[in-house]
Length: 67
Image (cartoon, rainbow, N blue to C red; front, top):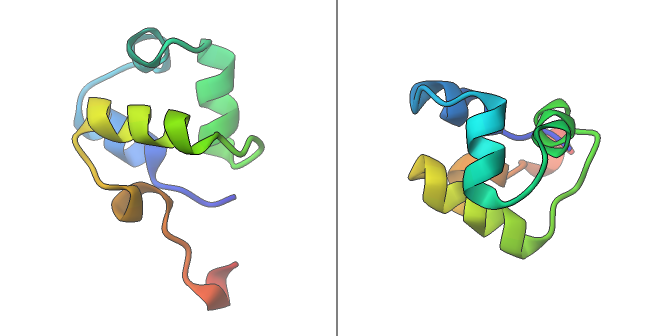
């Protein structure tokens, strides 16, 4: 699944480990999310959004033609 988590994380000057700690998950899970190999729950998506100060649409919206 495509997403903008890595870009948002870098804009906030956070490492994968720091984002993981702030969202209560592992660094490996953050890595998988950024690579599009793990589909996070809605709650986890929201947790990530709150940490990086972005909306769900900014991080996770996928246009139909890109899906």
